[in-house]
Amino acid sequence: MTWSARGYSSIIDYVLTNKKLSPLVNDTKVFRGYDVTTYHYLLISKIRLSPKWYTFTKRSLREEEIFRVHLLEDPSIKLLYQKRLYQNLMHSPWSLNNDVKWQTLKNTIQQAANEALGKRKKRRNKRRLILWNEDIKNLIENKKKAHLRYLTTRSETDKLEYKRLVAIVKRETRKKKKELNMIYMEAR
Image 1 (cartoon, rainbow, N blue to C red):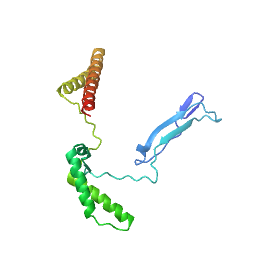
Image 2 (cartoon, rainbow, N blue to C red):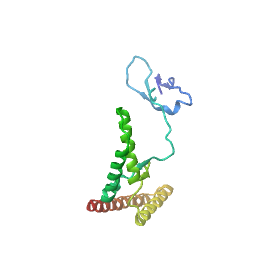
Image 3 (tube, rainbow, N blue to C red):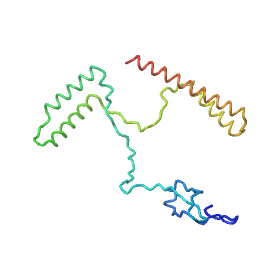
Image 4 (cartoon, rainbow, N blue to C red):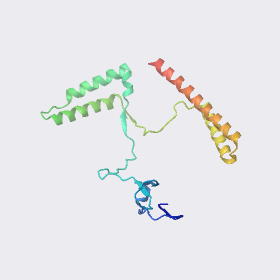
């Protein structure tokens, strides 16, 4: 309601958008109490507009390939990489132009890394639970069943059971993460 007087109230102020811009309207509020010597209230709408310099580019569906740098921890592979790099640097042509020098150096390092280390596909921010095992899988399935049971019955006992299972799943995953961190720290 944006207008109120003599016991009557009505909406007389609107925020109009077309179909294309309607998803960009985040929130519209009426602020009471602003005294502007009128019966109207202040109407504020938050609209998310993208900056003009921002252009949306679709990511390509192909996955990026990155070098398997973790293999350099192995001394034999590290030595192989150093030898390949030395050989490639000795056989690469040099130029007086700095841009050409940097490009040649970059290509030489990439070629040596590709020969010695190889490449792997980069994961795209997929949340994966490394510590997944059958116990945790069963606990999560039980928790999901309890949640569905609570949603259908809305009883207090089902709600308590669901919360108890949530706590158990959290506790077990924390315990497993601590175990894996200890194993990782001992291996270093």
